[in-house]
Image (tube, rainbow, N blue to C red; front, side):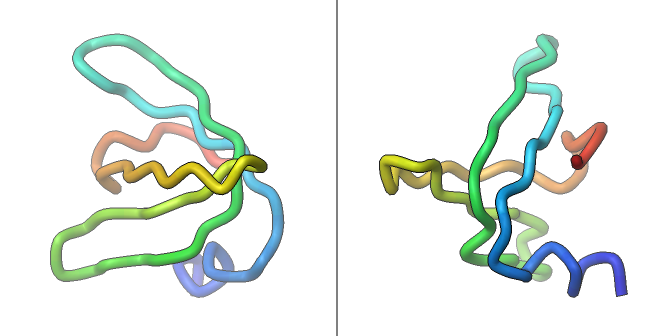
Length: 60
C-alpha cells in the first residue's frame, strides 16, 4: 500500500544516501520498478533521476 501511494502524481521530496553522502531530491514519481528495486523520478525541468529503494531514508 505504501508503494502504491508513491505512484500518485504529486510532488515528493526524497532524502537518500548516495556514495556515503546524504542527498535530497524533489520531483514526481514516474516509474517504480520492483524487480530492480529502483524508483524513477522527474524534476520540474523533466530531468530523469533514479534512486535505489534501499538508499531512501525519508519521503515527504
